[in-house]
Length: 459
Image 1: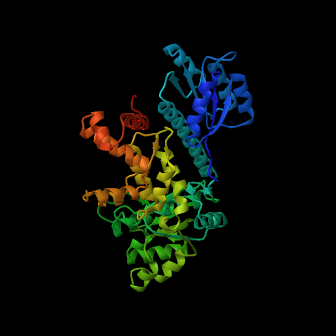
Image 2 (image 1 turned 30 degrees about the horizontal axis):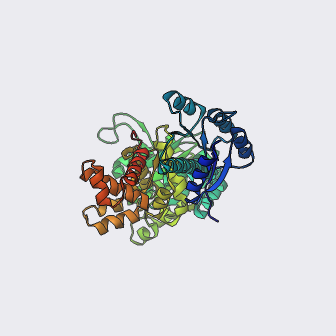
Image 3 (image 1 turned 120 degrees about the vertical axis):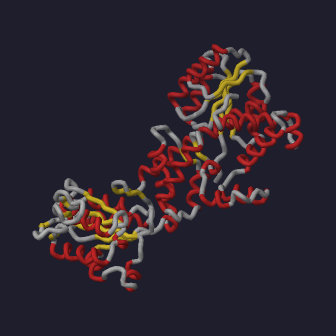
């Protein structure tokens, strides 16, 4: 059942109450009325309203005093105050009491309706943001890993079961799925958490240098070896060595790695003495190692030595239910302490996207969106996706509407955007702009004010 917005109208003037009640009833609101502030507070004690519209000057308790009490009773309910005795002092006093907005009689009915609807939209947005934050806080998580999908929950369960094991683990998954995060989570949830976690990317160095990094070398073993060097195996002693992108390791070094895993000892480059090491190996790759074995690029015996416990991370496109929590995580990470949010439509837009770069691409999009927009709440139009850029050369109206639909833009957003363009075309001439748009000037004014409010511009 669709929720009908509920408004409480407070005014000792019966004619004013009935006029406002009729105005909001035509817009589908459920209306309650109170003749005094005391009666309004009594009603608000047992009923929740989406907004309260109240006169300031009434017999007994004033609207300003009522606002302060109502804020204690219903802190989320926006209160809008109206008075025929408008002044800067009363406006400041109303805002200090916690009023959301202030209107002066006489007013245009459309203007007060717009102010109330704006207040309700803000309340609904805050409620949704609170709901999303609560949902994220309740999302299944393990360390830096987060997700709601069955696949991620199974990975959490597996990590808990194997964290204290010394068995080798092979993590597979596309680039950007978070294989390194899984590896760190495994280490820091196990009995080796107080010992070193040593990562190395096997694609970052030529094979000769990679061997020296892994096993160390002795002085004079090759040009530039001016002193003995301890390898990563020794540095990781008692802890974990994370071999990222193991599929790119050369065949010769694969053999030496296999011997190190079998014998649990390493020999530095140019050395004659072996060194015993106690290291848990976690390897990761985005390659199909079965295919690499068939093609002779990867040793089958090394594969079996590494693949004692396999963990596969599905791509993000196969688990869209994880997108909201990840997006919220990245939003917090890159907001520099500022409270910023994603609208429902923005979240739906993110969930509908095919994330070829997985979580890494999602983080990049969130960071870029925050940098390009100053809005507290990011809508679909504030989320630049690669698909938008690929279609930027097609400037036809149909292409624009297609991109708008892909971004899940609402009719209101499209209307505001078109109104802004027409105003720019007419250099701010509202008479001409209203004529082009086919609307009256009052409607144009409301659209312009709504746009200014959304962007935080002065009214």
